Length: 473
Image 1 (cartoon, rainbow, N blue to C red):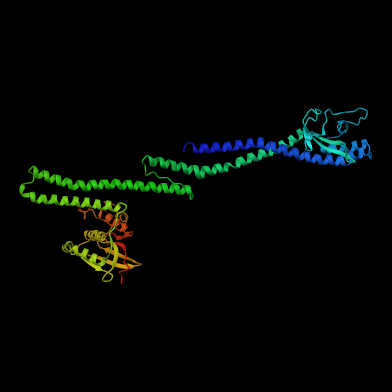
Image 2: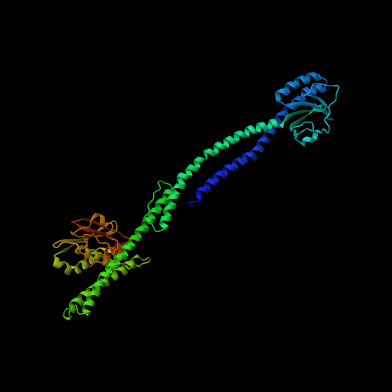
């Protein structure tokens, strides 16, 4: 398409012009000539009829002389640029404007037949071999006392009619040329509005097909072509982002699996070759056990996230008290919070607040959010969990006053394995999958989760759940 579409359009444009000239040269030419011939014949027929009913009729009724008629017809012949004859049915020429009167010599048209017009008023040809060129001949009968006494025949050269036809055709040719040149506007419009953007889109698709998803292009248009270019660019950006995420995912998985496996391998080899004495085996076996637990946790998180991303995941939705789930989850972290003197403050709406959701998965969401809040909070600080009801929704907020999240990282924290630079020193055992799992669980409920954070002041995560109207007071 890139190499031939424009050439095809140019070829079609040239063929259009060629056929336009052929049509004018053939059909239009013949139609124009025929129109002029009929028009001339009708005009001459009216004149011939007028002559037949006046001068010629008077002549045959002996009401005027041949000389007087000849004088009148000579003047009319000059005006019409045609020859005017008066001829008998036998073919004898009574009078012609092309020759002086000569009553002593009889001139006869051999083979004269007034029916040669075949139901028409005119005929074309050399008029029974009388003329050396093609003539248009018009007949009008001269009748007296209901009897045809002769005919008025007017001849005009077909060359004159053809000259008029060619003059009109020249105008048609000039008009066609002007139209053809003006139609270049369509070609220019096609080039600028269709072909050039299409070339950019084609070049972009070739780059994308070659694997260069970071190729950038722009089509400045607000029509369908611009929409197509924008859609293609967005699609490539999403694919590039997906590929980048996949590479990061593989790198992070490899890193997070390699680190504990390297530790396990190193400690076991050290115990096996005697580098670690037997009396310390228990200590290092404990480290190996911890690293094994870390691998199990990472594997389980990956399986959970994969299951959540699969289509057709069935949630076991029930009606339960979200306040009770929050209280039980907060109680589970008392042992973790006590050594760091972190307080968990609850500000819950009502004694009970029924929602419709998957209780087990919402417990996991609260666990992940509270675990993160504790992990990144300062000692001697407070974590606040609040619930509120609005527009048939329950909004759950988990707010800490810890290190916060940099503004540039807030859109990325839900990505798999993503960790901010500030969190890397505090989250040595984290998998970087907790918030990804949290987001997928909330999305599976067709709800949203958002984060509000200020670096150095803390973070607040807010998610929504549908309230159970049947159980609400």
